[in-house]
Structures are given as structure tokens and as C-alpha cells.
Amino acid sequence: MLSLDTSVLRLRGFTALVLRRSGVHMTKSNLIDYSSLVRVIGAECAFVRVSGELLVSGSKSGEVACWELRSGKEMWRSKFEGPCSNADSNKDFLFVTESDRVHAIMLASGEEVWCVELEGSSDLVRISSEGILVTSSVYNFEIQDYSEGSIWKIDYDGKVSWKEETIGRAWSLSDYQGQAVMGLSRPKCGYAIASETGIEYLELEEKKPVTAGCKLDNGGMVFGHSNGSVTEINGGVCSTVSVGDSAICAMDCRSSWVVGLDSGVISTSESVGSWNIKSLESIDVVSYGPSLEGSTGIWYSSWNGKGRVFLVDSLVGGLQLELSHGSRIVTCFATEDSICFGDISGCIHVIEEEVLRRRFGRLPEKEIESEREAELRKKIRALRGA
Image (cartoon, rainbow, N blue to C red; front, side, top):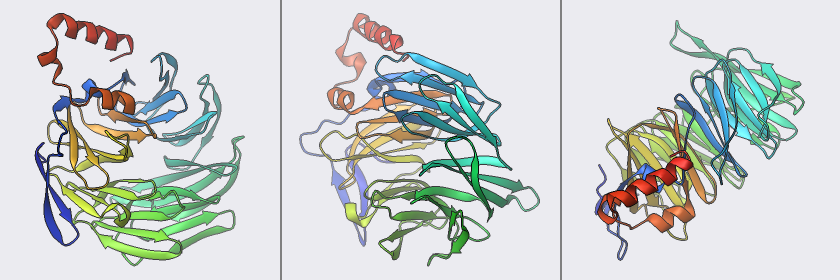
């Protein structure tokens, strides 16, 4: 378990001790203490997203809802059969995978524009040039694994442009110049590139199944493997590094990558120092996000009967903030100045950078406020749904 004053930082080849940052007062608080907006979707969160000034979320029970970030006002709510699984959005539309379908929903009104039925369970969706990419899969109970899948390209009018069968399920999906790039688990492993001309399977130096993947800002691809290795393909050069001895279960990419492992390791790419943090619990989500100072922060969460959310410095991995939470965090989404967390109870918490920095360093509410002042703050939060 990471402590507030010291945390073990494992650099490539040696171990160092990260002491409390000089002049910075760190406190243990609750997630709600730093949340500027809290909303409820009704069941376990499947996804959360911010699109412009709107917050959207979908649940495992099939609900999809939208709120205005500034006021907290609910704009619309829809109910599908469920479960929802994934989403992507642009300024006009929200695309949601749900059960064996994918829906196009107008963000402004919640009106469903079209719905396409897929083969098998709908999984991942990504916006691409001239439409969206969607994956689906079929689970084989005899072999206890996903035996087959499909990748679909659907235009913005809801017409299927092309479809390709995949061997096994895609565990990651990225768009590269209109092509679908998918990280694959067994039986193929490696990755595949699909387009209207067909599908091509490519091998990686690391032969273990892909468990996560994302695209770097410069177009490079990153894949996490079941044995704790990370493969980066950048500028035609493929490199692999081992960051732990268990599966990569969470990943985020910007100009660099950060991963979380089932064993509790958090690790970054060489471009931000190649540091490792070792926690005691499996990592549920990891994301770049707002920070306490100028550099980008790295957020991650874990669960061991109680939920914990951590903020660390992206440059050296120094622990800056630890927040407790009564429910397990299962999904997150970050913009340049905010991060949203969705939990298993159906609550969505939004942390904005301005609020984060303003509230950081204050003593716990019960120590600095009278009961009357604390109650007033709770009422103000309630107006925004906290």
C-alpha cells in the first residue's frame, strides 16, 4: 500500500524512495471532497464521457443519460435493453454499443437517429473518418473464450460500409487513417488491420495475448500483454518492454503511455521517465488528467474492500493525493482540465482542475468547519446532485 509520506518508486534497474514533496501538504480525503459534480446513472457505470459542455454516461442496465456540466442539469435520459458497453462522441452525436446493437444518439436532445444490429455482442466503438468503427464478438462456452468476432465500418447515416470477420475478439480498437487497428487475444494474438480491402493479421515480437491498447497522439500504437509486457509501434519501429509479471489491465495514451497491471504496478513509457509504482491491489483504471501544478497528472484507482483513487506526478511518480471512495471505480474519462470517474454503484464524480487546485491542501471538512457550515456545503452540493 502506498503511504502519504513515502512510496516505493522502481526505476529501470534500481529502487529509489520518493519522499514527501517539499512544501506541499498532502491529506487523505474522500473523492466527493474534490468532486465539483456528482450524478447517478442508476446501475453500474459502463462508460463516462465529456463532450464539450456535456457529461454523458451509460450503465450495465441500459440507461444512457446526459447532464450539462456547468449547471448539473439533466438534459435527457434514455433506456435501452442493455447492457451498455462502450461509447465515443463528436460534437453532434454519441455512439453507444449496447447488447448486440450500436446506437447513434443526438447529444443535444437524446433522440436516437439510427440503430444497427450486429452479430454477437457489441463491444468497442471508435469514431473514424466518414463514420464509426465497431467490434462485436461471440463467446464460446465450450472453450471458455471468445472464438470469433467482427469489425464493422458504419457511415454517419447508419449504413454499413464494410464488415470483416475476425479470429477471436478485439481487446483494443483504434482508428488509423480510416483503418481499424485491433489488439488481439487468443488464438491469433498480435494485432490486425482492417479496411474495405480486407483484414491483415500481423505478429508482434511478444507472442502473449493483447489485453489492452491505445493510440499515441503522434499516431503510434501501444499494446499491453497478458504477461506484463508493453509493445510500442512508432514510426515503423517496434519495441517491447517488460514492466511487470501480470496482465496489463488498464492503459491510457497521450504523447506517452501509462499502464496499470493486475498485480498493482503502475508504469510509464521512456519519454516520461520509465518509472514504476508498486501498489498492493489490482489497478482498475489509469488515466492522464488534471494536475496540482503545471505538468499533467496521472490518476489511478484500486479496490480492496474499499476504493482508493490516487494522483501522482507524471514526471517522477511522486504521490500527491489519495482519495477514498466507498464504491469500486470501474471507468473513467479525462479532458485537458477535468477527469470523471464512474463506479459500480452507478455514481459519476467529476473533478475539475480549478477545483482540485483550490481544495488541495485544506484540512478535512470536519476540522475547519462548524456543523452548520458543513451542512450548508452539503446542501450546495445537493443542488448539483452531490
